[in-house]
Every structure is written in C-alpha cells, then in structure tokens.
Length: 142
View 1: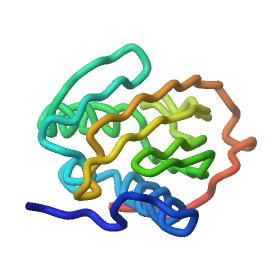
View 2: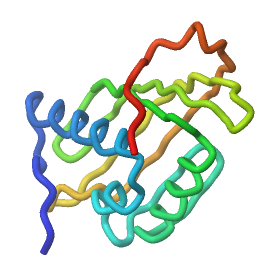
View 3: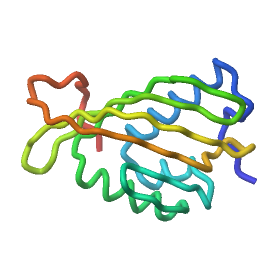
C-alpha cells in the first residue's frame, strides 16, 4: 500500500507540512506527479467540475496548466482535524493572450489513513489583474 506522509491524524506541525507539500507539488505544474498524491478513487469538486479518480485528476491538471500559464500558487493552513485539512490559497497565472489573473479560494481535503487525499472540494474566484500588480514573481520553470 502506498503511503504519502505525513499521515493522519494530523497535528499542527504535520498539517502545515501537508499543506506545504501540496503547494510545492502543484507549483511543479507536473500533472503526473501531482496526481500521485490522491487515492485511485479520489472524489473532486473544482469550481463547477465534479469527477472521480486519479486519471481524471491527471487529465484535469493537464488541461488546467495548458490554459493557466506561468502558474504560481501559495497555500495557507486554515484549520484541521484528525484526517481533514482546510486551506485558503491564491495563485496567479496568465492566458495565451497575456492577460494575468489572481485566483482566490478555499479547499477542504479529506485523507485516507495512508496520507493520500481521498476527497477535495475547491471553491475558486478569478480576478483579472495587470502584470504590474502581480504578487508572485518566480523564475520560469520547465
């Protein structure tokens, strides 16, 4: 059985570590790598999309990062219980026309005993911004 530490039940320290690991993984913009953090039957709600399974997650992430160029994410722990974590986040990206956006949102995560995420619910809003108003600067990856 695959494990993805830290494992539940979470403490403040391990919940923060789980959030940081998720931020780091998503910032790779690697759908194959990121999808491995979820159970094979993980249930997702992302905005108005609902789907189940690691392969659907990988497909979603591939579509996402093909559209959301130069994506950069920051996550922050909001709360946690034994096997659940809630985060707030913001990220920036631009489309192929060069329009920049900042997205704000909240996620609720539920984990299996092996530390893989079995449920993710995300509510997200996008705000068009000027490139000069970006908060997150980074070196181009990939």
